[in-house]
Image (cartoon, helix red, strand yellow):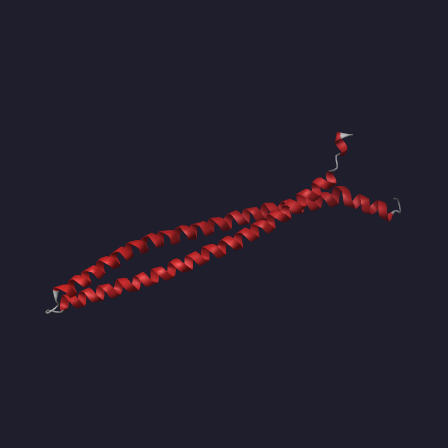
Length: 149
């Protein structure tokens, strides 16, 4: 077998199909992961909004308890407990906001990775199809047009 006459037809087709598979996989990965991240972002943002309301409500309750001159010790203690609970919730909210920022960065990175993969896949597919046609298929088409077997 002559090494200069390797069956490049299959190589070019492999390159073209690999490029298409990379493109399809990249798009699938992007939309799947994006949906997961967006779902998690929505969940965290909803929880953060609820915590903000709880914090404001607890502050108002504490202020109201401080202003009442005849507030019982039990009521005041319950208000301070509520403020402590909300303060813990506030700390949890800070952590969740950090997670939100990380998820947003991850989504931005994913966008760049997928854009790169799409570029590589498209270039590979275009190169494969071009090489296959330019180096093989047009000569086969010419042979068929001339009536040779």
